[in-house]
Image (cartoon, rainbow, N blue to C red; front, side):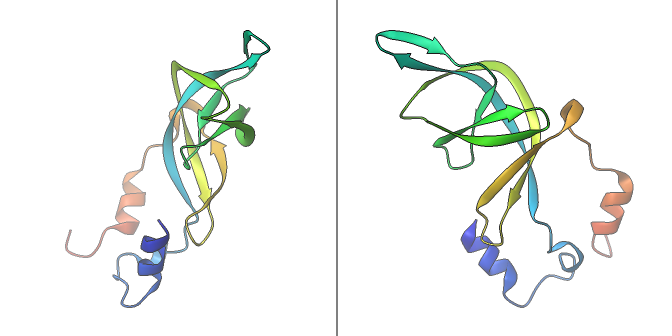
Length: 124
C-alpha cells in the first residue's frame, strides 16, 4: 500500500481520480472469531468478538460500532471463526498504515448511482 500511495501522489494523476484522491479510508469484510488463551493447563475462551487486523498478526476486538487493537496476536492465542462477518471502514494514514476501524450497520451501504455518476470518467 505504501508503494501505491507514493505512486498515486506523484504526477501525472488521472483526471478521474483528482476529486477523490483525499479519501483516508477503505471498506473491508471482516470474518469474526472467538479467541481462546491457555491459562495454566486449561483453554479459556475470551469474551467478545474479534477479527484479524490488516497486518495479519494483531487481533482487534469489536466494541459496538468501533474496534480496538488487543494484545492478542496469532502467536499468543487460538482463534475459531464463528461464521459471522461484518463490514467496516478501515481508516488509514497517508502511507497506508491502518489506524482504526468503524463498523457498519446491516452490512454497510452499497454504492448508489449518484456516487458512480460523480466518479465515472467522461465517455463511460
